[in-house]
Length: 123
Image (cartoon, rainbow, N blue to C red; front, top):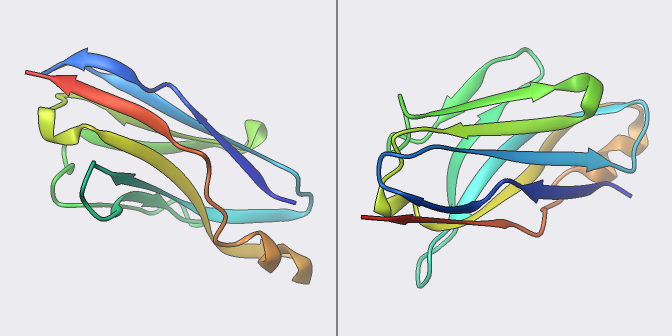
């Protein structure tokens, strides 16, 4: 089955940068739109960014101009480059598979979440 493993989180000062990675495995002849979400303590999980099969991207207003999503299809990895980090970006960051493309069984791999990676930004 599809598995997602996030990495790259850590602690940085405000204004710093981090690059998160989400490595996908466990499938063949499938591709997926991918998203990043985050959840801060005491808050609901929120959408951050997504990348689609046509290469188009979407961002939450709160991260536009600071975060960039990209993917390396050869490595089945999606990245989230985060610049000009703010204390309010502190959260657990999760990647998720969205719409599936390919053979019929690929749909079973939609809606899969990774385990998350912690990002902490200090002022």
